Length: 294
Image (cartoon, rainbow, N blue to C red; front, side, top):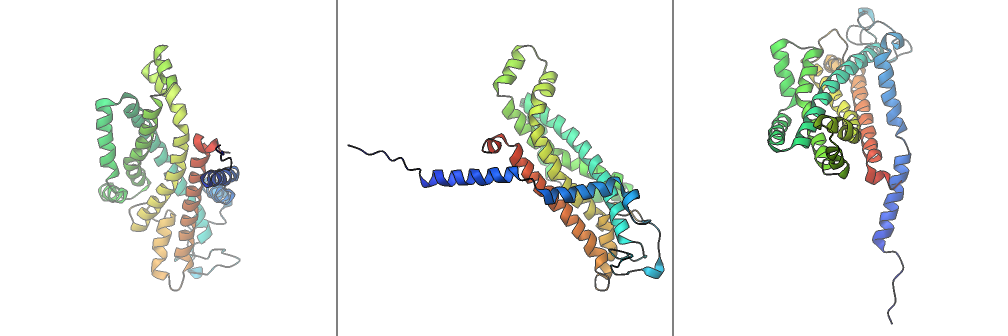
């Protein structure tokens, strides 16, 4: 006579524990990250109304003043209010991010749909183009554009768009190839749907989860790239306020006026970290395999 083991195994217990913890994480919104992103968006959209002063007006009598009740974050090398310049810098950064992501996402999604759906020679050519593009450093492209046409927001947008579309195309291509094998795509073909309608109506809505995650994660990448280029003098030219340019302006005074460089550096770190946290949360929440465990 044999006895059947009814006690759950250790692996099953661990799997249930992991599932429960994951469910709690998915139900709990990343409020700290959301608040930081909301503050960034409010500053970028309503900068002229929420900023306490003029970001361009110098006041040499108050240059390099430390944080005080009058200037909450201190003043820069020309006596301009640092909080005001950070708020307007968020506005400039937001404009660059939105335009660059809109162009990159549009091109990358279209290319990814074509490569994943048609396959064959089109997929091979596009895949090689994606690999070659991802091998080029974004900084190199931006510096080359700055040398050719001068620094500015347009140079940053073009440099980001040249590189970033490939990130979208690679992920969307993979998702489309997986979806193309599903039964509902075969049924759409049998009912006489054109290729364009199949891609736009049946495939595109099913890759929106990946698109949302890519947008949230790559926003942080674009912010870092724009700040880096402005720091090197190849991004937003002065006197337009830019977080990277403010860090660059204050690096020679770090010993006597640390707030000029440290404050925008903290702002960059916070918004990039918040966007990455939100992107990770979205990736888990929008994943059907993870969402089924909630």
